[in-house]
Length: 178
Image (cartoon, rainbow, N blue to C red):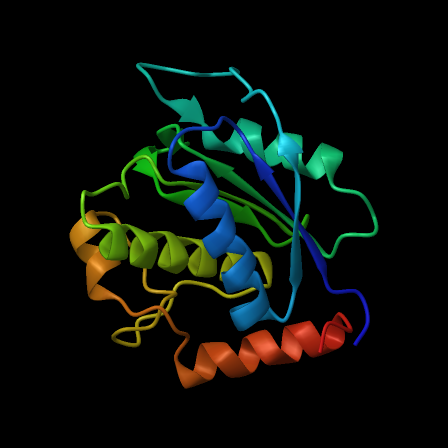
């Protein structure tokens, strides 16, 4: 195994950050064969912030600037609601070119702890799938299904379909991760 370090940065901290970080480390290990390490808490970029939402692309850009060459990927996690160009909100965004992703858990919150954890794991898996070149998938239940609502997040599974899993493994092999 070669380079398998993935850094996890936070943009803000609240009562759910610890759980979210723990799940992120587990997802990175279980789904991507990566060793997740906490990289620190950073002030969220306020560029293009609007109506209580932060601009996801500014967070993503910040991650690309702080990601050291020793890391194969970097994941940002935030309790803030985020949006991206052309979308009222997003659960996350990713850049395969820079191998960086941001996930917001603001809209994933629920009093049901198990449901919250399931949603967080799905969205981290989904965005990290994009980091490693996967596109949206139409196979029912695949974690790479596009989600524009909590209903759609809850409907999809936590795992990749066979086609997405094979493509992911090929990419991780090419990067020397597995």
